[in-house]
Image (cartoon, rainbow, N blue to C red):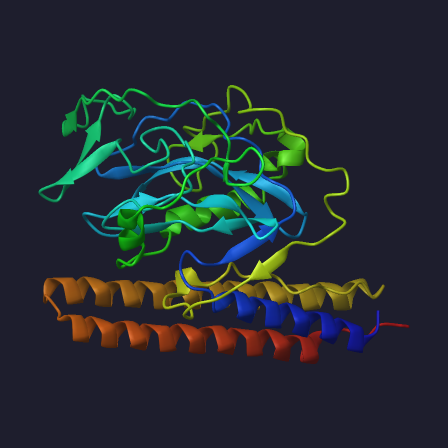
Length: 364
């Protein structure tokens, strides 16, 4: 492989990463030509501790293997008190299936009318509620150990439609549209998935058994007790939510990626970091040295992301304690956005510099 070809591919990948990073929260959209499998049937693990909130499993898309993969449901701590999780969902839009990411906010917004179960039955959330700074669990739909968690109540939920279709609109999709109330909730302050949810998604993407082509809509890990922990407390799906018949030529046309809206404000809104391609030149020592340099830079950049995220979260907490004004919060968010974009640009430049400096020359 020639050096120019390697650099061209790397530059294209860097440009794609930077383009994705400009997508606003909930508006990063991955478009796919065929729909995801139905929501599988599975049991909810017991809530590990008081204060944890259930986030249901969903199908995500991996462009590297051109396949859907199941992100198991899990229990996580909300990023702030009085915040609820609005799940992501797929919808048929302009001739393709489009993914709308989830978010945390003061209310549960529109999630396509998808029945994820466990309180997320298509509209709102009936699995629990915040009261005086504590989360109370509805035992009718939440699996909690009452000998450990005492803030519970019982509210019978009826008239639940057993529709396990995982997308909105199109042929066979759920027919639901956002209400005026949903649109108002969409304009509220939102926060992205927390670190545990990000770990859950990344671990799922790296597990070949969770790909739809491997499990046919019945994932061997359907839910976990904690984010990123796929062994202790993991639950397998009892059955698929319905037949799954993807097109035979599903890899013939790559998915489209659309981005719009404001740039990322915080590091955890940026797309997951990707290793740059390592050319196979036939010189094992030089290729191994380049791989080591890549791994070292990748780890360093991951740490810098986490450190900046922690500093920004501490500033949010300080603003809450000091009852900061709306103007002060807006200035803080603008500063966070600038910090995040500078970090993203610096990391892209570091990757490009490493490629130019370390990539071994091919023999072609």
